[in-house]
Structure formats: structure tokens, C-alpha cells
Amino acid sequence: MHIAFAASECVPFSKTGGLADVVGALPRALAAAGHQVSVYCPRYRQTKLADAVTVVPSITVPFDDRYRFCSVWSGGNHSGVRFYFVDYPPFFDRDGLYGTSTGDYPDNAERFALFSRAVLEASKILGVPQVFHCHDWQSGLVPVLLRTQYAEDPAFRDVATVFTIHNMGYQGLFSADTLPLLTLPWDLFTISKMEFFGNVNFLKGALVYADFITTVSRKYSQEIQTTEFGFGLEGVLRNRAATVTGILNGADYEEWSPERDKFTVARYSTDDLSGKTKCKRDLLAAFNVSNPDLSLPVIGIVSRFAAQKGFDLISQIMDRLAREEMITVALGAGDKPYEEMFLRLQKQFPQKIAVKIAYDNALAHKIEAGSDMFLMPSKYEPCGLNQIYSLRYGTVPIVRATGGLDDTIEPWNARTGKGTGFKFSEYSGEALLETIKEALRAFRDPSSWQKLMRNGMAKDFSWNASAKEYVRVYEKALQSQAPQSPTAVALTAV
Ligand code: ADP
Ligand code: GLC
Image (tube, rainbow, N blue to C red; front, side, top):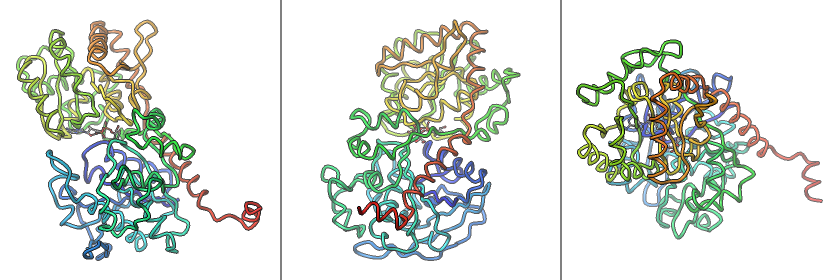
């Protein structure tokens, strides 16, 4: 099968979060299973291409006032996957992918509309796939365009679309006049299509027009059909419930394994955990913790700082958490109020919490390896990757039971010796505090703690199983496209 991914980020070329990890790894798993896979991404300032060549010199993209001309570069073939980059420096040669810490770029609708149109046009030259697999609102116009302006285009006659929701919290909402600006027809501006409380909603368009919809865990696929988690699109999803599947993200263990991590001072495995202590010492040094007591548990945090991640709960309990025997190390960047909150907590409790406001992949690996526990108190979490990585590093996750966090972490039971982490349900500081205390108590019994670590390390969340589930969805999407046989048409007509 030939599948083309269209996404706004992809490891190792660009990344702000887990979407990039998924788009970096799932195509390789599909290629390993014998499929032909290409990946389209924008070419940002942070996208480093060795030996890049132009493969499509000029694509014309219409806007209401002018034409824009972009090109497509090849990023080569990696593990059987072809990478293509839409190049349009006025839109993509910028510091951030989507904006700065003060907000989104005001022309994001134009930027990602240009990307989506360029993907379709480029594919006509580079090879039309059987399935376009699009991700999040930034490529949401691909299914919309295919079923509207490109509906009569013979190149795309039998092409199916699958759309994956990585996060319902980001929808690509723009003012109504965006439609004419992007030369999209006004008949898309209805409640059953892209209109959303007077605005244009790219994600809604994708949910309406994609043949099949997936999201990144089973639990989240159910949650987003409710008012609490649907961000206003729960009704649209419920209408399409028969085409919605939850497929858990995998982990790329080439990148995220204590046995072969390129960024840590020592390697370790279930057979020999001794390297983890060296990683802990190195981690605390990286956070400038002087004279560290290595017997104290270290709780790690690596995160985008956004309301979704639940860090307001930490600030509610930090004064009481500070009485416990532990130290927290936090790495993150994002929304200003959370950056300031963490810096404030560090100032207030310098012995208890060390903070780095940065995006730093090497340090993220050091935290996975050197911490004893990993904290994700998310308000909602479509899948979450760091808890899955943490399991492999024997770094015990403490999570809120939501979305993929609930699907991947089993509560520890010291009596039976079963379980992989600690979780709480109620979104409250009290519940978080109680759960952290429970984890700290468990840590005091080294032999049962090692059992808990090993339970997590033995879990296998590699991509193979999930890639197979995606193939089943692609097949269903293709079947939904297959022209009906004359008999079937006749029967339907009767
Ligand atoms: P989300 O996609 O919502 O940000 P995930 O848990 O799915 O959450 O994935 C986050 C990914 O981004 C992980 O690979 C994590 O290591 C990485 N990451 C997040 N914040 C940072 C940071 N400040 N520095 C380095 N890596 C980060
Ligand atoms: C999103 C979600 C995260 C998920 C990631 C990759 O950014 O917030 O939970 O793991 O996408 O699917």
C-alpha cells in the first residue's frame, strides 16, 4: 500500500512535541512491514537537511489577492521512508513552528493552507498515494480539499484519507474571512462543515471530510466524544463514531532505551541497573544540585508547559510537597504563566525543585534515565509519550488517569507485585499529593521498588502492533472508496 503522511512536525527534522515522535516513527514501522511511505512536512528554519535537492521547483498556490509559489525538497530516504519538505521561506523560515511564547503567528491559516495545497499538488508529480494520512489541524485541509475543490480531479479519484487527532485542544480556528482569503468556497461555512461559532475551524473540516478518524489512545477516543474533553467538537465526533478508532502510540526504542541512549553518561538494563545511579548523579549535576543525597528519590518532569499538562496542581501542593524527602527536576517551555510559575517555585523551594526553562532533547533523555519517578498530572492527555519512555527507563510514572496515561499505566499493588506506576483520578492537588506520597512510601522498600521498576521495563510499546492497526484502518478507508460494482449500485437504487 502507498501511504503519504502530511504533518506539521517530524523527528528528526522538526519538533515541538509528541506529534513529531509519532510522525518520525510510525512511517518507519509501516515501511518495515513492506508499505511504500512518504512523509510531507514544512521546511522550517529548524529543519536541517543534508544533501537536500529540489524535487518540485514550483507549485502555484492561489490566495485571494495573489499567487504564492513554493517548492518541494527531498530530505532523502530513511529506513525506507521518503521525506519531502514544502519550502516557502516567507512562511516557514521563522524561529518557531507555530508562533512565539507570546502567541500564535497571525498568518497560520495561510501557512498551513499553503502546506496542504502543496502536498496535494506535489503528490501529483512525486506519486499519488492510495491513502493520505493527515495529522492535527495543520494538515486538516487535505481531506477538505480532496472532497471539495479536488473532488473531480481524476488524479485523486480513488484516494482515501485517514485523519489522526493528536490533540482536540488545538483546532485551527480562524475568522470567517479566512475562507475567501484561502480561495475556499463559502458553502464550507455551514454548521455541518467548517463553521464553528462564527469562525472557520480546520479541525472540524478534517473531522467532517476524512474517510476514517483515529486518535492516539482508546480511552481518548471515548473521552473526546464527551463535553468534558471534546472542546465543542464532541457532537461532530459522535456523528462519525462508526469511523473513529483509538490506536495507542508506540515508542521508538531505538531512541528511547537505557541500553543504548546516546545522551546519558551510563547505560543500564533490567539485568544490571547500576548505571541508573550514575545517570542520577549526572542529572542532578546538570541541574546544579550541590552535594546531592543520592538516596533521595528524584521526580522528573519533561513537558510542554500548557494548561493541558496539569501543572497548576503542583503549585497548589508545593508547600506541602516540600516537606517530603524528595527532589523534583523540571524541564519545560511554553506558555509564559507556567514558565513563571516553575521559576517562582524554584525560588521559593530551592532545596526541593530545580527548573530549566528550555527545549533540550539531551536533557530530556537524562531526566528519563536519572529520575526515580516521572510526573504527568495532565488534565487531559491524548496519549502521552514520556510515561511510555519512563517505563522503559525504570522511572516509575505518577500520572492522572486520563487518556493514554490511563491506558498505559497499571496501578502498583505491593501485595501482588503487579503494576507499573501510580495514578489518581480526581483533578485536584489533594489527589496528586496523596499519590506522590504513596509513591514515596513505596520507594522506601528497595526490593519491591525494583520489582516495580522491572515490571515497567518489561512492557513493550513498540510500534509494530499499532502500525498493524493503522493498516487495518487504511484498508477500511480504501474499501470505503472502492467504486461500487454495477450490481451493488442497482441493489442500492432498489
Ligand atoms: P505532547 O505531544 O502533548 O507535548 P507527549 O508526551 O506526547 O506530549 O510528547 C512530548 C515529547 O516532546 C516527548 O518526546 C518529550 O520528550 C518532548 N519534550 C517536551 N518538552 C520538552 C522539552 N522542554 N525539552 C525536550 N523535549 C521535550
Ligand atoms: C499530542 C498529545 C500527546 C500525544 C502526542 C502524540 O501532542 O498532547 O498526548 O502523545 O500528541 O500523539
